[in-house]
Image (cartoon, rainbow, N blue to C red; front, side, top):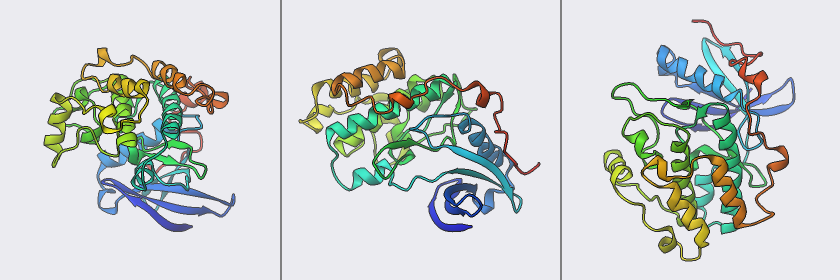
Length: 290
């Protein structure tokens, strides 16, 4: 039973629903009605479900099922009641210790995603939800792809201000592209502004390609030098000059506040479960035919 609308995007909409059989609330994602007849969009929605269902990590929104109703596919996901990081940051500045805590848990989630051979490609404040107690949950794998991937001719997917230079250029990307996006996300969380956003998407992508990000230390003088240095490192134009893995980022983050960056360690899963990987659609998926 549909309870409320949670949000709308370019491709689809997300609704809050009541699972009356199990007595729980879930989020349901489906395509906009005008896109239901487009097989490309339909396959992209299904691919999102196939990719996301394999993840088993406390900082990633869980996909529960893929259902068909009234000729449309629906992704059933766990419902996260808190605001997105974008909404949270819009309320005001966040404590640096909390930003580092978020960064630790997101980096741990990225380790898991990359271990599953997946690149998110759209890591940004809007795609990270928070629980009631403020824990981050990585969401929206709608443009995710297998590592190392490249878009088709003339096709660039992602959000311009959060894309890596190689993603903007339409070049093959690897997990280090997500690390650049993580740097943008951390910069925005601390400074409250994007390091690259311009008036339009073309201008923004030109900045991503050619302009150095403004100094985080200057934008926020109270930021610890080690955190400012890490963000600068993540925002390197050349992937070879960035941290080479999410694990490397995690080590540096944990050094910032020892003992407080390990909250997800006891439940962390940095390898991809073979049981899930062997059934990419999920054993309970009941998608529409065609």
